[in-house]
Length: 419
Ligand code: EPZ
Image (cartoon, rainbow, N blue to C red; front, side, top):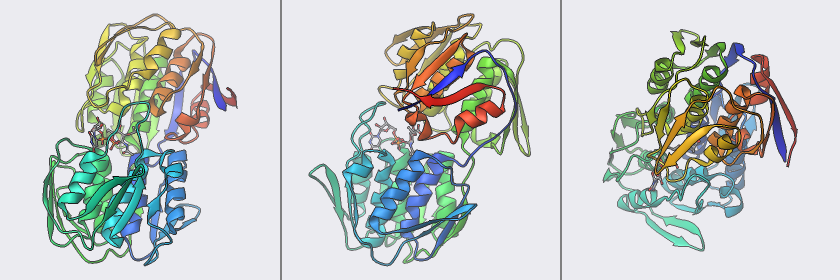
């Protein structure tokens, strides 16, 4: 298995180009299942999770072609199969996003239950209940969600909690349902707005995406869209956290400050200079990061996907900090590894209490999930000595060529054979 070898202690300077957002690209690629004609999607990041999405779509019989600057997705009028199988879904939970589009356009879907993952149980009950309210039969058979419906009808659905992919699945189901659907207590993430903008470009009638109440007037057909995916606010936040930890001045080219207000204010409160520009966001850390407290929450709260990266930067901050995780039940897997690098962290229930140390020390560490691995990279960049981060395939799920981007900023990061 591949690993990263990181020589710590070098500041980051220069420009990093922020890639397309993973968590917008995935639902938009699945949304192509709804469209009659060829869709052209630009700024799709080259990630393991995107490759997994192509594997699921191609397994269904969807034609996926790569151009230099875009991907071309064409869903035929009938598919080879309507099943997203376990061997593919277990590699990427977001495959659950095939459920809504398959059911809405083809009236049937079999999607393996994704199962839990390192950060929690990750149920999909809200997805299933919402589709039942729209007239679908949804049951669990042999570890898969089996869904059938002649034609979905609109419904007034109140989500028990603002699930991101749950909102996305029901939004995609509603655009081809008969009549009006209202999604209340919907998730408000920018990636949902991006998905809605894609669907509108393909002919959908959606109001209120980005707010807690989304209204959809169903239509009979979606044609196609030529669409460009938004920049990845979590990738941008990850490089921001790295600058806070090691110092330097970096332009996050293409980042959209409007998607990241809570993250930017947290790091600005810890002494990072934040300068929004037309071309992105310039961030500068002179002196020592003084740390930032955070409580993760659904958007516009502090994103859970930035929790591990903030903790890594707080490990070397000048003031004590507290970071609470309220979204997932087990998302502190990175803490054990940070402790092995000399961090001073105490976990109590859902809160990590961090006392900044003058410096971390290099160590061989193990990545466990996508954002935990990003936090270990940040810690290794700040540590004295050379660290090895194993199982870096976790990182490749959500970060495009991270070692190249960091090396271009002056870091010493190399991809090696690990264990
Ligand atoms: C999306 O996951 C993201 N993934 C996650 O990013 C992100 O951490 C998460 O939203 C929260 O922002 C994609 O967009 C592909 P949820 P999702 O449903 O939709 C509970 C990353 O690092 N819940 O909003 O699976 C659930 O257990 C990944 O890029 C139910 O109880 O998250 C959790 O506690 C990791 N029943 C909470 O809701 C349901 O039916 C939020 O989960 C659905 C969710």
